[in-house]
Length: 83
Image (cartoon, rainbow, N blue to C red; front, side, top):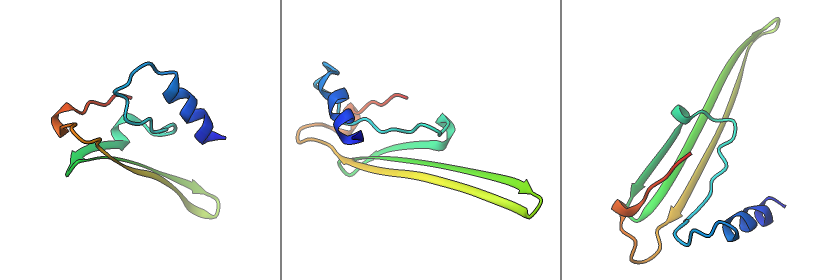
């Protein structure tokens, strides 16, 4: 399952400071917003597509919203993230 695969990835990462992995496949970096506030890391990704077909316009929309609490003793200014 995806959860087991994610756990394996976390376990094999050798980085004891890794807080979370978020799968943002299908999103471009400009569609992803990461904020650190009130002891939480929030990841928001939104993707919109518009297609014109013979029947009219079709819209595709997908989003991800994850909120992860920082462990005790970790300051908001210590958080880094990368894609």
